Structures are given as C-alpha cells and as structure tokens.
Image (cartoon, rainbow, N blue to C red; front, top):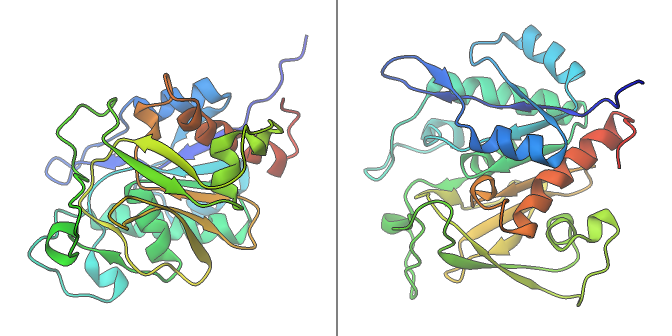
Length: 259
C-alpha cells in the first residue's frame, strides 16, 4: 500500500547569539504535524544556493517567532527600546523569503515572522510599541500569562484570506455568519508592523489599533499573524485552521493529493 505524501514545511530556526546554538522549540513542529504536514528545520547558515534548492524541494514555509529584526534593514537607527537581534538569522530569512515568493510558495509568518515578511517586502515596524505608540487603551502585548492563555482580542476584517482560513471557509466549511470576526489571542511581543509593505494588506487589529494580521495581495497564499497560534491550536479551532491552511495551500501548490 502506497502511503500518501505529506507536504514538507520548512521552518526557520531559533538562534542563541551567545552560544551560536540553533534550535526549534517543539510548539511549531507539533502544530505542523497535527495539521498533516512534515516540519523540516532549516539550517541557519545555508548558502543562497542551498536555500534555492530547499525552496524548490519544500512545499511551504513557516517563518517562526524570535528576536527583533535589525533596524538597519528597514532604514532606521536603533532606538533605546529595541531588543537583541540575530544578524545571521535576519540575513538567512530575508534571502529565504525572496526565493519563496519568487517561486510562489505558500508562506506563513508568526510574531517575528510577520514583521520579517513585512520588512522583506518593503514595509516598516515599530521597534518598541510602549515607547513609540500613544494608546488610549494600553493592551498588554507582552502578556503576564502563560502562552496557552489568550490575553486580548483581535478583530479580523471580512473578505480576505486570513478571515476565510480562521472561519473555516477556506476549507469549504459554511460559517455561521459573514462579517468581521473577533478572536481571542495570546501575545508576547514588543514590536509590530507599522507601515505595511506595498504588496501586503493589514486585515486584523488589536483593540489599540496595532496590526495583528496581514495577507499578500495577488499571491496564492501568504498570511502573517502577530500572535502565537502554535500554543493555542489544541483548544482553539481558529488557531488550528492557520496550520491546516498552510498545509492545504502547500499541498495544492505542489499538486499533492490531500484531503
């Protein structure tokens, strides 16, 4: 009996700049496996030729969370509120994003991932929300709870890929009601998308106006979210749908038979 091939999803790796160790916490790989894909941890020091080969072989890509992106990459000086960066990771992920987009591969970004994608496509970010954004309602974007506990809401506008994936309409499910959705998310970040790249559209917002989700216009499948669905998917169908959406899009892109 021939086993059905599962989509291979490349995951960007974490990088300890003190020890030079690379690693990937289990949350994202577990979510990819549960959604029906096979996670492949990408090497931090892969050359551009290596990345080009990986992009041609892998079916989709997940840009995971992590440290701040270096401000020089979006044309700014480093502000006092900026945190630590990994120059190696920035370099590798920007090269990977360029190649993945050139080949129209499905892409998803989480936390740092949405910021890196926005920067790579020509947008900017807030280096430090508390010191750069005046807010009437100071939402705790660095929540005091464990990652598995939601801390604030996000309103998702209607009529876009992110809304369809979260609601299940992307999978052919019938939503109870059409219109903007409000979902509960976790939050552990101090940076966020500021000016969206020309090719991106902001489609999800926190109560204080911070951008929490983007999609790429005129592109097969690219979603970025500011929260961490990899810690919520076991109890939250909308979070699970984000990973299922990436797997389904990756299967379609590579013409894999996938239910």
